[in-house]
Length: 319
Image (cartoon, rainbow, N blue to C red):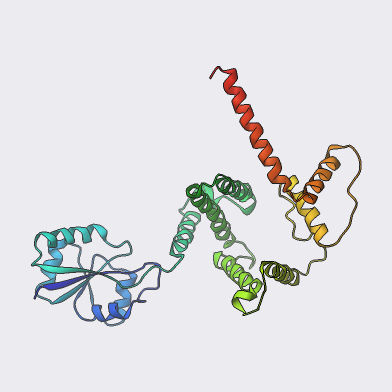
């Protein structure tokens, strides 16, 4: 009966020692080897399972295994793919030497790469990391947060989902970077990415009782009404305009304020006069009454004008 060599792969994003029952049974059934010490090797040793470090090639492992019916190769955090490939090719040429089996002792949980993003940003902002990122502040990074959000918006407008995937990564970079910088706030004001995620989770659970608390709703309109009610109770706002982002583009800001005022039943006459500002405000109000999004309408008209400019340029150059 040939030797059975189990290549045991585990998730580096889970606590060491958190393995399936099958994996624990396997590592207790034969000698365990690894290319280097690791947190996983330390956890096995702490549980009474010896782990031998072998800085060698496939033949060296075969020699160390000898006639043992079962042996385990504990893969490192990156899976030891070159070594596994070398061993697999060797056994493919001489199948009588041993049987190679791949076993997953643990799997990456959903969202595991988010942990990688946090780790990478921590490395970049920590001493010895990237000087540029270490020199930033929430204020200096603010324009990039807007820029990356606009680029993601553009990808959505173009229905380019591949680009959207990348642009959302850039937005995520800003979120994680802001959270990492906040860890170094002085005087007990520090917070981190777990605080950001924790607040988000609590908010989503609280504002969706129809999902998490068994509340019965009839339709999406009732869900939206519940959301707004819960939000008002949370914020204890004194004005219907509290919470409006005043730094957003003026056209969008105008539409938002008109929307909030109408929703809150606050009837304030629109300003009179022929000056440009009041005139634009009245145009936005008219668009809302017609059920139109003034920001989208102006964007569409502007992009059409941009195409006309490009066409005129080509005509002027003889193309």
